[in-house]
Length: 301
Image (cartoon, rainbow, N blue to C red; front, side, top):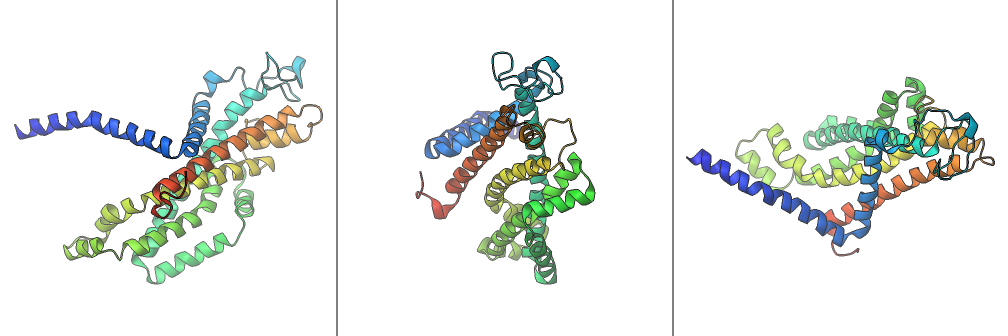
């Protein structure tokens, strides 16, 4: 009977959970309209990337030799490049590469950074010293240069691109997590958990990680913009997705730069796609930071 009552209570509470989530999103949109606009831009580009086969009017690899350098118009909304490939289709499919690499590398860098930051700060000692010196070495190199070296050593492929950018994104995440954990582990509720006999792994899982979630999400959101720019830069240099894979950076370099006078739209539209993606992510990241950082509460609109 008690189990049945608990089940009914759980079912009754489920709609309220959904309502609370919707209410929270609406409240965020009212308080941080620019952050909500950034989230809408990111959501739109994600939808285009996921639904690329449905949204793209042509095959991004299809060659229309009779319509090379066609100006933007009714048939080709963003024009065509030197080979007659539809720019709009390539921009839509290029979102898959840029967002896929960006999200994959941020997921890798976040996982590695959280693990290294928690281990370094919570257990400290020689382990902390060793981890932080490695992070210092990685942070001594500019982001693009370090990613360029890693991709050059490993070779150009989507997997290596994700791995390279993920490694580049790890140090900042590790530093942020370490700083948060150093303050959290001295809290009274951590001492109380130890006094009750809780093991270190349990304390980390139930008390430490939930309290570092907010800064992790904020840093990961900001890092996603950097990851997209890094992927576009590597593709621009010919170290990204192998041709003829649609990629914003590769299209900006290969067709757009060489034939800019004949068909400037071949460079303008991939460049705008990169700009809008980075703008949306930065706006969303600023909104999340302002909403979750208590030091900034009420200071920005």
